[in-house]
Image 1: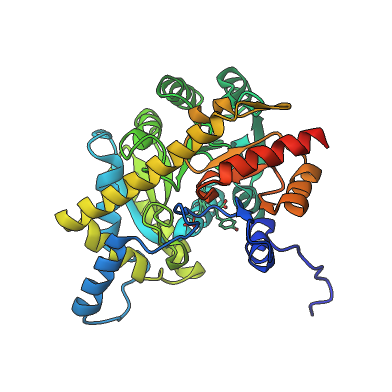
Image 2: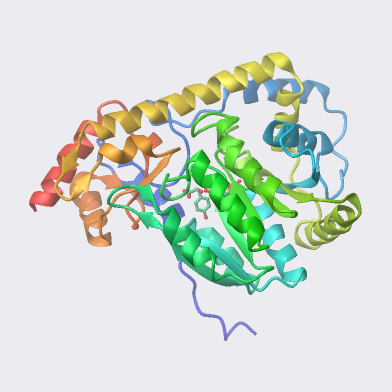
Length: 392
Ligand code: PLP
Ligand code: TYF
């Protein structure tokens, strides 16, 4: 029965994890998969998470089923932090999902169920966005609007392509810390984007997986709040896997915003139905920890302090990189304008391969680097490697 199948490639980003770990060179640098790392190159469990785990171990009385909506306290706590009082004219509800990926999968299936045929997105985007939308049968319209040489967002280009959308089409936006470019619209640009989305009657789907790692917790929510306030309906997909360091615990949520409660209830009943057929109910552990942290002042303070340390480390690495300035055709100075862990450099796949074979520097084939992957002293070595690449 399987003779019609053809072999599929592995995710090239996830393959880098194995390739890096098998490389015996001690000076190797891992700028590949997008996990936060400290100055030693480690991704430790956050102290707030460890403390919450101790409390959970002591207090959890049952592991009985919760239901397809997952941990309601978690969903409510994230919504409060994410939306605050920014959407007084909207009704909001959501459910817990297995990571941001689970949220995106449900959102994509909901779009198809609702009769949406096309989704517009700024290109390039996270590879899994394209894969998920394609798999559910949505047509993807790529919007070319990034200038990688100058590390800038081309608003006019974005709006020009968006203007070709029809009423009812969806548009995907990264809430903050764009993956793979690290280039986000400015607050003014968010305002203009929101106006166009509302005027064209498009359905915004906002994916946010790095809240608190860009400009700050509330600053990082400005864009999504602006868009969701302007459009009558919206979908938001959320991941806690970076900002709570939960990764393999698969912790996320999907929310819908609506101008009236009745329609919201109907949409949510469809989301619950989709969750049941995909995974029945989400894994509990990560969401229980996030809830314990957010329901406790002390743990919230500890977590916010750690998150801010992570954000500052990424910022200071951006500054270190920017100080390298112009290296051949690559100008690293604008990297200070970028947000979050990622930046994409104008490197060809051959050049990426060369950096790996000659200098043990690992990054995505697209030229994307995970800025948090630099340990102390690595930025200088990276600069030297780039110079020798340009000279080669
Ligand atoms: N959305 C974006 C933009 C991401 O970069 C990621 C990365 O992991 C996700 C969603 C998915 O997150 P999760 O690991 O929670 O599925
Ligand atoms: O872009 C990244 O590196 C992260 C991690 O299939 C990731 O978002 C990468 C690929 C993948 C799942 C997670």
